[in-house]
Image 1 (tube, rainbow, N blue to C red):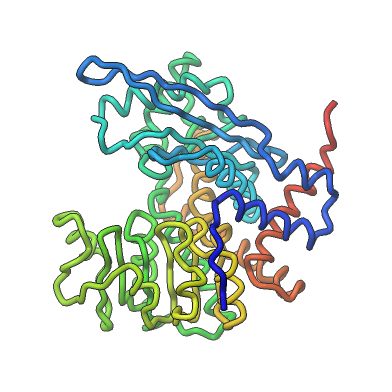
Image 2: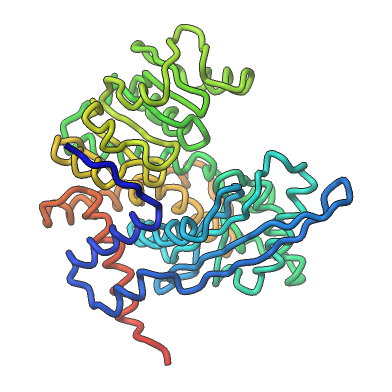
Length: 418
């Protein structure tokens, strides 16, 4: 019988770091260094609203470790942001970058705001003010932001322009996830979702799962979930269920992701899609399918529902959708779980490609971006799989050992200054 345990993003991240440190027999000093961020910046953002009133919002930027390269991580606008949550996400970004073997360290930032309640002009003023308050800690060789929850390419264009205006010249390499018109990369929008399916392809080979007509259920039909569903469909998989915050839909014969997206744009929900049956998010997780892709919120697969999970593979497109107890239970059941820090590192990988293009003032074709993404994701999966086989562990343990180990090696090699 499982006992329910309350998990926060930070307690889970620290527990994962401790596990990796023990497995790696990590130096205690380096373990302590990695257990907390190098820098946390908190700011008050004063914004003049359209009606002339002034409001104040709290902002944060946490920079975890940069031993392998500049800090890298998204900026989210969300009313319930906490410093602990942002610190945990910055730590996960450090491991993701190391697993993907790209020269970055992890960071994360955000503003406590309900962006849906602000006009576009108010959001622009908020973004520019936030950037101006932390600009001395940003830069193409210091900390490179990207979009995250409730921010987008337009937000990043404002970040780029604000930074550039303050520096006195255009610096497109100061941020990634921008519109293509101002230096963004082809394929950035769909990168995270497509990266998840690259991992699914590799994992399927290891468990002898034939992807042609394999059934897929996707919880969370936002940007990542939609592109994961679309990439799976392109491989010949049957997407039998998808869901968003309003609920889900199910069709055992398969759904067309593009048509579902169009329906959602027109109605505000995936539900009531023609030819499908409405289901709840909880029912989606328990759907009979070959591959389950949690692409929504954290703590979705828990000790309360793990016994009802029927999928042969779980590919974590979201951050932290599986609690530690459920993680262990899935492994014992023989379910192949591709962990978040491996599965969803496609986004930061193509962000790296964008940064490289900006630094060299090049622009790559979508074919080149997708080819290089596939190569990176395949190499990352193979590295994690090889280590997990050597350690006789699950893929999450292998991924953590690979990521933490690479960062620890960089710190040891560099030494401490002064």
